[in-house]
Image (spheres, rainbow, N blue to C red):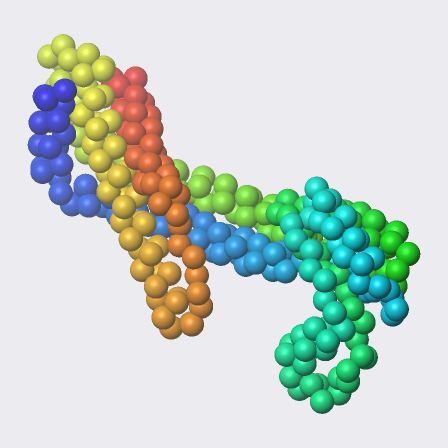
Length: 283
């Protein structure tokens, strides 16, 4: 292992330009993939934030006593899909309307808005089918006049999320394939630049495993370096967007960032193994 590390270090020192080219190519290939991943992550987060606002509002008929409303709220809170239940009185509904629609605050009068039972659902139970099912159960209460939850808006939201998911997967696979091809070609150039060295090692009796090890370590180091550089470029791009376009974007979590660097290392090792193996088979 010590000999492998020494040979790898010597190879990197002999060809700094080619090493820098390999690391830069890996970095920019992963950077393109990382930018796409960052956009997809922020789109998903934005859709999740919108999804969290999904709420079912059941309007209560005038004259319903408070005990019946409270009993129904307790019953509804026991539904497995329900996260929370709030009872909104007429006065609270009026105050909320004046706060949310300030330009029409002088239009609303006391008693014009009905009381309601507002139901928020748990994550994983906010799809149109589940929301419609819960809404139907709310309609079964005799004192519920109407139930609203923005059905058309909810259907469009989930349709958009499904389209974004399919498109994101397809484009992500395309970016990944292009990155692998570019990185593989770069590593192949590095192997060809040392073709004479490989031939001499083969002539003096070196095994294929012995020849491969320095290249695999070199590919690993280049992949890690490229992954870290790509991560830095992606973070810098995010900061520029935040600063100049006044957007609040979310960056990769520590686990996703580590996964990106690991992907660079994996691509470097696999690319080196494939390039060296192909060259050895040609000798």
